[in-house]
Length: 323
Image (cartoon, rainbow, N blue to C red; front, side, top):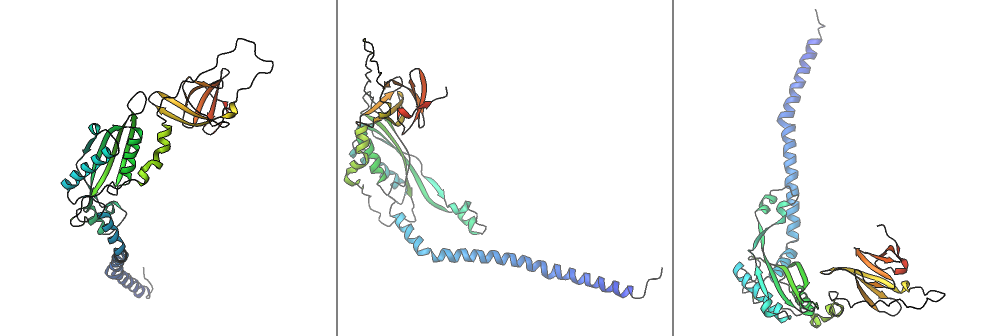
């Protein structure tokens, strides 16, 4: 088969063009793309570093302020001071000295959170190995009056060296519910690199006005106390009047539910005269017998039927409850 004479030059030209394109791609375009990507990564890293450098004075002052809230530069020193301070607060707040116990656990290393961030730079690898501070966990337990327990909690919250309160519990210890067992779990931080030189013994900061305004209402109410027995009037032997007296259900408003060692209790207030009432399961007011409750909802039996009343509603606003 005889091809036209112009085919051969065109084929050679196409082959030469393909070779030139391949050489351009492998020797220039692809290396340049890789270099451009690396350059963008470097630029992003530099921008992050520049932003951090601009914010350095503020960060340095914040770190200095944080270091001043620590109680010692060493683990042993912090442990000893932590125990001493917690014991002093418990006793001076009114907890029984013989009941107070202070326990601490081994200080835990806390690594820089930047090591688990979404950073894609080499800085992330360095942050994974960097320890920010040590966390020393402590537990304080003791028994005392409700006021002494609340004063202890308020005083602990006022201390700058108590960096976190993990949890607390308050349980009645006697039948009259006048004595309570208090347990508080809390944390103080140790930052050896940030602690000031010659760090002084930290002073205990008192609570303003003794803290009485913070807990006076709680102590006076004492929701843990046993409610007085509810006296239900006996039915008169004489026939009822022609027009029956309707129970004052609209006067009694539900103000709260509480779970205690003796079970569920409900709090009511008389909107007419301000009388407050606490009902245990089985007790009644205005012919409404308390059956129990959960969350914001209480159940009552009235006239042999079961009703539900939500927190903030009166007995008049009850509605039939599903059994």
